Length: 107
Image 1 (cartoon, helix red, strand yellow):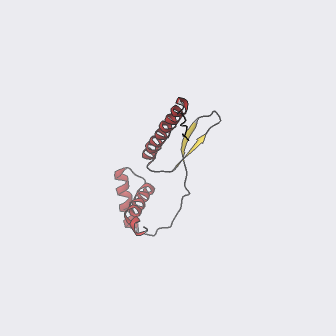
Image 2 (spheres, one colour):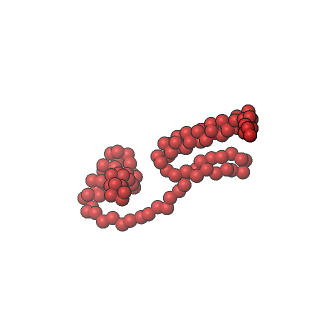
Image 3 (cartoon, one colour):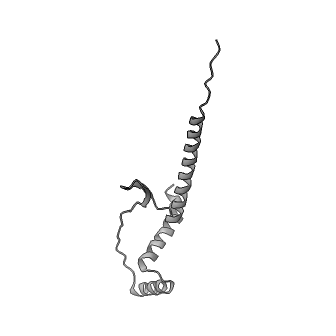
């Protein structure tokens, strides 16, 4: 008994190829967005006009009290002013660098 082989439909193969291209384009767009947002998580939404957009997922902010000598804080503030940064952004940068450096402890 011979097995009948079905012919591949040109339409189906074209649709499959378009799906692959769309998936590749989606991955590329996600990489670009991740690069632009610095790795911040994004979520895809569809607005009422049918357009899709990627928006940042906002994270909850935490506060913590810090007690340091006033002279040390004045030096910290002077350095940040010289760099044109806010104190908060400098602290966030310090914490981010610390977590990145010490992340191997968690793994």
